[in-house]
Length: 457
Ligand SMILES: [Zn+2]
Image (cartoon, rainbow, N blue to C red; front, side, top):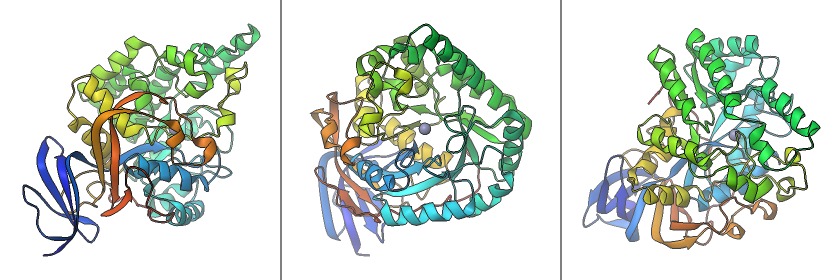
């Protein structure tokens, strides 16, 4: 059998690193994996001495929350440069969120025309709870659902009240798909924000003070009670608290299908970083304390976190500028291009194995979203999606972000990194060479959910 491509390097597999290995590709899929002298192929990419990971799967990001579907183009470019070969994009798009099969079909058409990497999609429901559209969204290929306990906008990002949420969970439970929840308590946040404003406190730290941990854990408890009641797989879209994972585990032990994910910022950023970064450090939920970051790592190493994502939200720079009122700044961070170097660096700093990145940032998100084994691992039969990392002393430079000019900002700008993404391959094609994105808009494809099995870890 003649292969199309052989990629050589140290392969980061699920549980181990295969040194001086190779991946042989045929027809865009992984056809052979081995060690030592590689077989003959039309083309050889020699990354000897570098680490070859599975292409990352970012289970939570927003291409279109600020710019609409044209945002798919730039966000997916930064994904390619960051070694993220599959994005799972959120449905809260401008001007219309993905709430029925017709809108989904239109978004898929945009993905196939604009994306530089493969993309799976979440669906959502309107504020009035159009549960009759759940089956059509699932038939159209959504991999998961997203709903919120907190309202940013009554149309784009509505709060779903408890009776509607219960109905939605009961309907989604029939499909076995996961529903990820934005978990903040509306009443508490609104009250605390009003009090802060009345006291004339609109400085950056007040973003944390008006969204204290209990605003998150209250929402966690409500959604998990409804998970227990309905049998639906309910997932915290972003827990900034180790307590979120403990609650998910407690409900699982009682028979519920519950889980939670961490975004990478909650594994390294603290309240002090918000004070330093001002608007460029604002996200929801907010950064927590240094002690909480340590508890997050304890949860991670104990295997309690479903997976690690970015919650990438490339707001135009002008929406992130703090001008005396932190509440007026858009919430969300860029994170796709920094994802791999930062996760690599955090694991190395803590002396943890790099196989954790292959697991938590590729295989597990692919499994939770029903994309495995097509996506998420270096394994025969999987798509040949690979990320090559070169060790060294690098600095993350936000001006190098491969997105539109006003999205080239990062909370990690200037941070020392212990590796960089030297190459990215999507279905066997090189889409990033360490300097330039080689993919074109439309190189990426929509990836539908592959099966209806529930995965809880
Ligand atoms: Zn998000």
